[in-house]
Image 1 (tube, rainbow, N blue to C red):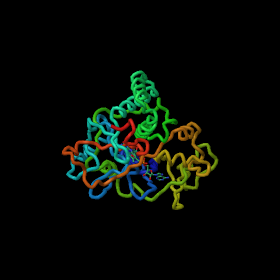
Image 2 (cartoon, rainbow, N blue to C red; image 1 turned 90 degrees about the vertical axis):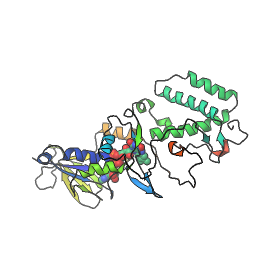
Image 3 (cartoon, protein in one colour; image 1 turned 45 degrees about the vertical axis):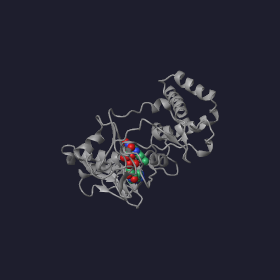
Image 4 (cartoon, protein in one colour; image 1 turned 180 degrees about the vertical axis):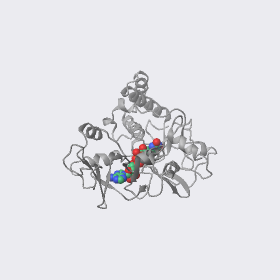
Length: 336
Ligand SMILES: Cc1cc2nc3c(=O)[nH]c(=O)nc-3n(C[C@H](O)[C@H](O)[C@H](O)COP(=O)(O)OP(=O)(O)OC[C@H]3O[C@@H](n4cnc5c(N)ncnc54)[C@H](O)[C@@H]3O)c2cc1C
């Protein structure tokens, strides 16, 4: 019997699942596949775009470690690392000489930023259960002795923002540091994709025949009935236990669904008023969905009139950290 499988979402997860199933040997003897995507394009949180003539990534940019990374493999097979077009970010190196500049253009004393940064890092390591405070505490005492205690929390706020960026946490106070420390990159370099992250999406989709992905097909409800359920679905032969309701009012039947919608959509979906799943998901799943949190990671693209006076600007990686100007007046001990 051929099982009908519907994959919800045409982001990288949905497309990877579709490609894997579709390219399985003799798959058409086992599955009839369909991907339903609520939006009007594939890729989800991956979208290569253009800004003033330059290629930019609206979503994912980095391959976090190339060794054994399936995304790297796909990009390599598609020659996606060769492009003449300028891209958002080359394999950037952090400059040895880091400078921290306030929003109104003042340079902050680097040794103080370094001391506070060391303390902050030690504190994070400690929270993740692998560091000790000694070295960090010494550095922070040095800061206190020279009288910058009023500014500590401001530099801390900057470092906290950076850590929230890496961890995507909305609030470090709610972050489970032990669990967060389980996250690890693939080994070796972290790189960007010269021809754009969307080439990985296009590659996955290229294995699928026309019409297999349906755009503009937002699923509003997933109804499932087990074998022992009295209620029969009105799908003619009663053999397909899943009924999908779509926003356009249509319904689809399936034997299996693979749900690849984002955590935010799941959070909304398990709310009583949304009732996306019928019957509701088991409590261990709804509890996990509720407990997992996330913050906002936004991108800001700036066009600068002149890149820099430095010759090696192409090799440096500008990193935007913010210290609000009102906290560091030119007379402040934070300033050089
Ligand atoms: C700004 C930003 C920067 C990032 N940077 C990186 C990076 O540098 N490196 C990295 O590895 N990762 C990065 N990520 C994370 C990465 O983009 C995601 O982890 C990945 O794209 C998620 O893929 P997915 O398929 O799981 O989900 P999604 O891409 O969210 O795909 C889910 C799809 O489901 C669809 N959908 C939702 N609800 C429904 C519904 N009811 N019915 C039908 N379809 C529905 C959505 O429209 C979407 O297309 C970044 C993310 C963002 C937002």
